[in-house]
Length: 280
Image (cartoon, rainbow, N blue to C red; front, side, top):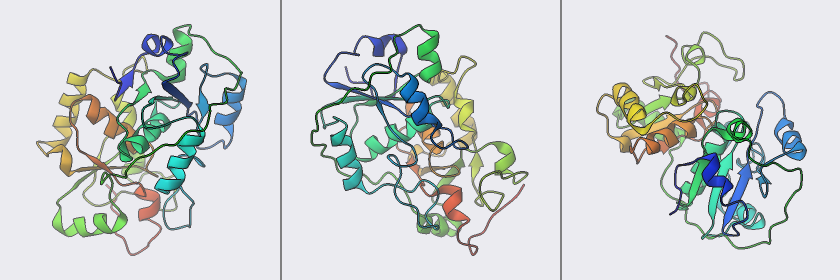
């Protein structure tokens, strides 16, 4: 049975020696560059490769395309192949930031049409709490060829600008409420949000144990927020297109498939001063 959204620590533990599985450590600290790589070097899930959110899960920045631009599809597929991932592998991603960076890798693979990818529910902390094995050894997978086809699962800044008039899409902003409201902005040069966007902090998808809430509860909460809007009209964004993937994953867990991502998100939006912003 392929895993396409979430996988538990005990379920993953059963497949640590399975050559048809590939595990990625996506630990990341936005305010401490290199912290994820250092943590990985100290210990990680056996067989896991490190995925750098800044370098591996994003493309080059040009000052106008956001802090984590969508990577070039061919370059990303080459990186996957170099890390032992072909189109048949079951991929599992985990991190230590509530699964936001892991969800980014999940979304990127889904963008390329790869369905066999899941996020470790509970992340690194849940793995340790469950007393599962860890290692400092780094595996070296054989290079293979990943073949995928980019899907129309994202929108660009131009689409969002046009939507200000058409309102065909409904944006959901995954940032903290105080950033969404423009009360504070610790990272980007402008505070506020895109006009018309709703707010759903990605951490609200998790329970006190750090695991995703039950599908029924997520369905109820997103239903209350979206008020009957069909999932295929929903576009997720955040500060840079990472934590927004968490909301997209949560909707998938809830059985609400079809929403899309605005990868450039707020950091791209405010790079052009002609684009409107709202505070409330």
